Image (cartoon, rainbow, N blue to C red; front, side, top):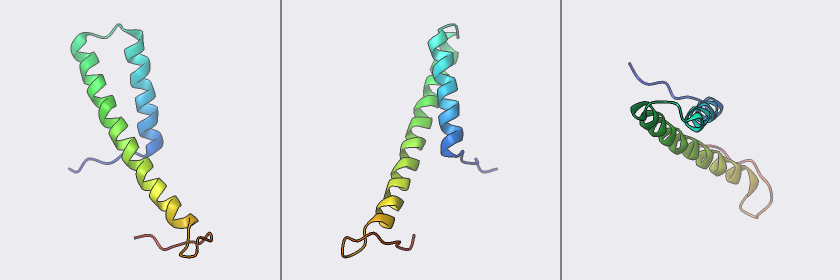
Amino acid sequence: MAKKEKSFEQSLARLEEIVRLLEKGDAPLAESLGLFEEGAGLIRECGKLLDEAEQKVVQLRKGPDGAPEELPFE
């Protein structure tokens, strides 16, 4: 079964939850490492989603003559 990708908002909410759990400092070391690894993966995924969104915004903002224009997405 393929892994379903989370939305940016879902990933960010989970990342905030992980930060709260790690800041409490009462999780065992193995669990803390697992949370840290999960968080690092979520940061990468969120960064990727933000980069993709930025590219779409750039396509929407700037036409060939520099004027705002909506361009088709690929």
